[in-house]
Amino acid sequence: MFTLNVVTPEKVLAHRVEVEEVIVPGFRGELNLLPGHAPIMTTLSEGVLRYRLKGESKQIKAAISWGYCEVSPSGIDILAETAEFPEQIDFARVEESLKKVEKELDHISDLDPELIEKYQRKAKRARVRLSLKDK
Amino acid sequence: MPSLKDIRNRIGSVKNTQKITKAMKMVSAAKLKRAQDRITHLRPYALGLLGVIADIAVTKRVVHPLLSSGKDPKKILTVVVTSDRGLCGGFNSSVIREIEKRYAAEKSQYEVYDFIFVGRKVANYFENKKIFGIDKILHVAKDISYGLSNEIAEKLMAAYQHGEYDEIRLTYNEFKSAIQQNVITEKLLPVDVNESGFVKTNSSQFSEDLIFEPEPTEIIDELLNKHFAVQIYRILSESVAAEHGARMTAMENATNNAGDMIRSMTLTYNKLRQAAITKELIEISSGAEALN
Image 1 (cartoon, each protein chain N blue to C red):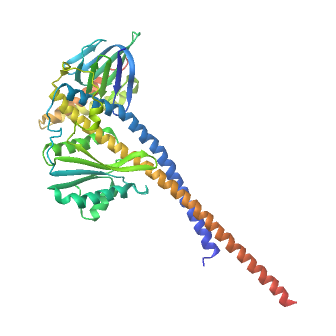
Image 2: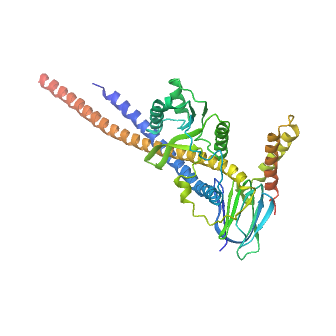
Image 3: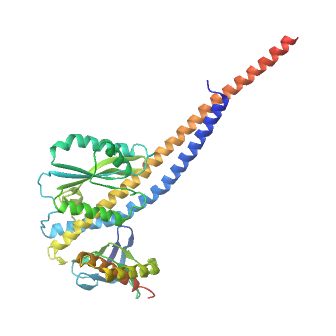
C-alpha cells in the first residue's frame, strides 16, 4: 500500500488513495516519488502535482501552491496552501488576475524586493493554473 | 385596564416578532451547518501540520524563538473574538465577562497588557469603558476566509517577533454544540511543544536519517508560522460556528416565548370580549325590563 493524501485548509482533495507514481514540485525541483522512496520531507513550491492511481495509466493533475510534502514508507502526505483540479479552476478569472499582476510588476517604481517577490509569486501561481488549461 | 383594541394590537405585534425570530433561527441553522463543515474540513490539515512539527521535533532537537523558552512572559497581547451582531444569547457577554475578570486580576502583574478586538460588540463595549485595543477587526463572520486569518496571523507574528509582546493569547467561544459554547483562553505563542497535542501525535515512523529539503531549521520556521495561521483560522471558524449556534438557540427560545405570550394574551382577550358581550346583554335585558 502506497497511499496519497492531499489536504488544504479548506478541503480534502485526496484521502488515502492508492497510487503508483507521484510527481511533486519540490524545493529543489520536481521530485518523482515511487513506492519505496526514502523518507523525505520537503517544502513545495507553486507547480503542478501529478499522480497516477494504481493500475491506471492516466495522470491526474492539480495546481498547488506552497506547502509541505512528507514521504513515509506507507505513503505521501501533502499539505498545500491551495490545491485545485483543472475542472475547479476559473480560467477566465486567472487570466485576468495574471494580466493585473503583470501590469503591477511593470509599474513598481521602488525596488522593494519583498513586494516584487510577492507579485512574482502571484504571477507564477496564475501561470501554473493556466498551464493546466485544455490538457 | 387595556382595551380590546390594545390587546389585539399587541398580539399582532408579538406575532410579527415571532415571525422574525423564527426566520432568524432558520438562517442561523443554515449558516451553522456551513460553519461546521468548515471546521471538519480544516481538521485534517491542522492535524497534518501538527504531525510534521512533531516529526521534526523527534528527529532533531530544534531551538527556535517561537518555541517556548520557559521564561515568564512580561508583555501580553490578548485577541478577543466576538461577533459583530447581537441577538445571540450570552455569546458576547460571557466573553466580555471573562476579559473583564482577567483584566482586573492580571493588569498589574504585567508590563504591557494589550488587546485586539475582533467583532464590533466587544470593541464598542470596551471603548465605552475607555479601554482601547491596539487594533480591531470587523466583519469576520461575513467573509471568513483563510486569507483573512492569514493576514491577522502575520500581523500578530510580526508584533511577536519584534519583541512588542512575549505572549499572545486568544479568548473565544469554543463550539461544543448548538446549545453549548464555552469561553476559552488559549496561549498561541510561544508554541509549547511539550503540550499534549504534540505528544499525542508523536507516534512518528521516522528515524533520524529523514531527508530534509531545505534544512530542518528553515522548515520549522515556516512551519510554525503556518501552524499559527491555521490555529487562528480554526479559532475564528470555531467562534463563527459558536455564534450561529448561540443565535439559533436564542432565537428558538424567543420564538417559544412569543408563542407563550400570544397564548396568554389571547386568553385575556377572549375573557374581555366575553365580559363585554355579557355586559351588553345585561344592559339590553335590563333595558327591556324597565320598559315593561
